[in-house]
Image (cartoon, rainbow, N blue to C red):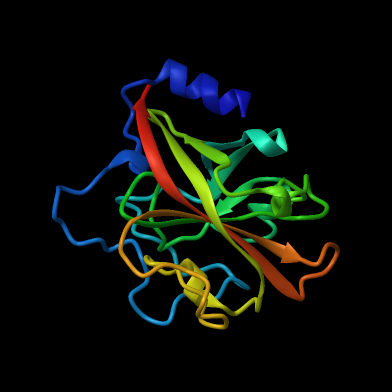
Length: 203
């Protein structure tokens, strides 16, 4: 993470794919318009013109309540991303600050277990995502305590659980989704925490 921040400081003018915001009124193509991806496996490779190369870390996730600060890498593969202790970005979901759903996955146990205490997040908690050029602050407002690993609805551009339809959203917005396994030490179900973008601060 220190290496990433040093790289940002030494190359401030380098392109930052996470901050390539669309023009006002432009259609959002980051979210999945269909049945939603399966969180049990990595998704198809994203468009490299708008997304960083996997498994390079390109952002830093900070959750003050959990005293967590961890690098974010593209992809959710176990060996090249999650097992290295990174939080992984689901390809084909939005990038930080963009319309749609910026969706992340992390281990709850072993391999750095960045999302060990994800269940402790509460309504109103801040989640910050730092990139080379901006800091995005999301605010937690909903939690889905348990759903199936195949519930791809939680990753849609407008996230809503397909297994438990009373959990989710109805309107387009700038969403954050955090996912991990539950109960602890199993991969039987998924715990999902959602938030909305509150502010953007340029660096």
